[in-house]
Length: 135
Image: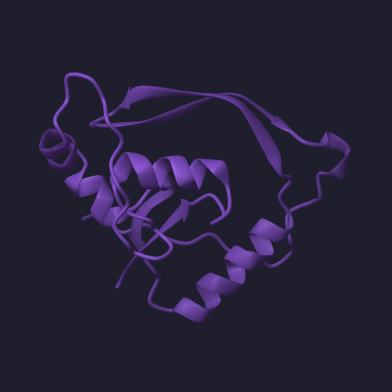
């Protein structure tokens, strides 16, 4: 089985609501959401161009799909992720720009700053890196 590590804004976040509108689907409920009206672009065109992103939902890829090492299982991955994220400092993104990122379009963050740099905690002891498999 392959895994990927992604970020999705919380359900009540304004970015989640905007993304649901852009893609025509709520990532949380799976329900269809009415696409916005954009001058010069038919709803059918918007549906065509958002078909693939709508399937995967709005997210930020942190780590591309990978396979676990043979000695790891999903429970260990989840535990490692919980340990890692509990040691990270929240940050604010002042500005997002739509940009071409390699072979796809995405939101390029500018001005990401720690909320409180003094709150930075050390990485949790015992966390082991996960291996990536070549596909």
